[in-house]
Image 1 (cartoon, one colour):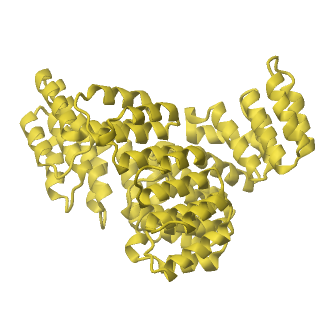
Image 2 (tube, rainbow, N blue to C red):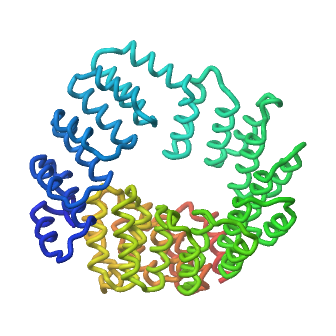
Image 3 (cartoon, helix red, strand yellow):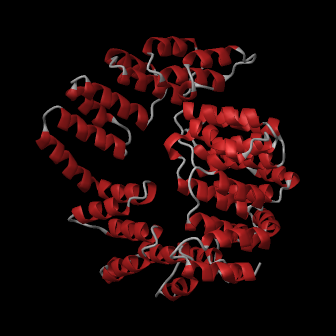
Amino acid sequence: MYGRCGSVRDAVAAFGEIAAKNSFSWNSLFVAFAHNGDFGATERVFDRMPSRNLVAWNAMLAACRDSSSFLEADLVFVSAPERDVVSWTTILAANAASGELSIAELAFHKMPERNIVSWNSMLTAYAQNGHPEMALSLFQALLLDGIGTALVNLHGMKFGSLDKAVRCFERVTSRDTVLWTSMLAVLGRHGRLQEARNLFDGMIPLERDFVAWNAMIGAYAQAGHPREALELFQMPSRNVVSWNALVSACARNPRHLDAKKVFDGMPQRDIASWNSMLAACFHGGEFRRGIELFVEMDVEGIQHDAISLVSALDACASLPDLVHGKLVVAAAKAELLDDLRVGTAVLNLYGKCGCLQEARSVFERMVAFSRPSAPLWNAMIAALAHSGESKASMELVCSMLLHGIQPDEVTLLASLTACSHAGTKFSQLHPILDDHFGAKLSQEHYTCLVDHLGRSGRMGEAEELLEAMPFKPDQVSLVALLGACGLQGDLSRGQRAFAKLGEFEDHAVTAIGCKELLDNA
């Protein structure tokens, strides 16, 4: 469990200590060599692996490309028992880098499916090999091929870049209803409701299909504006998606009772209707009611999907309720248990209920057969921390980095929990966390952790972290602590934070609101 966190020698030593080596331990060793650029050793480990999944084949292919071993890349590609879009894109890039542009073009045209990375790799290949006119022609084909909509969704939804999504939208000269609706949904996702409404109102009335109406209702739903969602709900005709969006709007407000009324009044329901109501129960803290609703789905003959399973499992984990949790797992079809979201939720349930062996079993199975996922690793890190396995928890953080998975605030919080259980004082935490997270550990991250700790009732730890962080507490971090004090009714700690807030010159308006929080504590 080293690689980026240490040396390959340490990784080999750790691997040698494992009595029963499985696919996870072999993959960890393999990735350690791959990340350290030792192609010869990487190839030897790959050849010795008793079994290889698609992730391992793709990693070997990438290692060949990165080391300019282009002939080996071709051999790995043709030898792989299965290939996905990552495999095809990697071999495209390898051949482009070796100057074999015709083979790169062949790979591009033979791909069973293409994503934005594939198009970008081919564009780069043309540009780097001195064919700007072909790059321009391909870019125009990209927009005409419907990728304009994909670009809008990719930048706006996945990467969170609204400006880039808008620029892509503006570059497409021939816009269809799908593109308009995608841009509308992106604006809604970013909370730009007025701009979304302006776009919606600017659409030709005949082009406003169910999808466009529902996207606008969904934008209001996501922002928790049931009144505006209800106004649009009075459209000339509506379908079950419209009803589902209205349930979501009431759930996010949160107005659980209103969501229940809408749900009960639906002329017909589909699986999304039940999932929206399950989400309403979860967001409203009605975990028992959510489990009951999950059981009602069986009675009504509604087949569960991944979303309903995750909601039910999260409800069981929040209580925690292992008995009902195991019933939910038993109700799931085998193929759904292989779904990354469901597997993560099952792992989280076992972790919250202290079933560490079961959690480990789920984790190793999911890592071996699923794509890299920060939530999955976070759930296992948290499970270890919750069970007092602090050292193993921090080692898994190291292994997470080794596998190229970027840690986030949840990882940081789980690390704090692990260090806390190990008896580490927060004043000693910064160098430990900095070793693992480096430049990611900003003041904003510390503030987020203070807020997380406070909201989960760990007020002493929240205050201690605020004092020990390597930054002077600013107004945002102090207000985060004050908000938690108001939520938890911790008057004395809130008064201390309020006094520190008074040191800022422009604190007057903020102080009024914070005073109200303390008065209500």
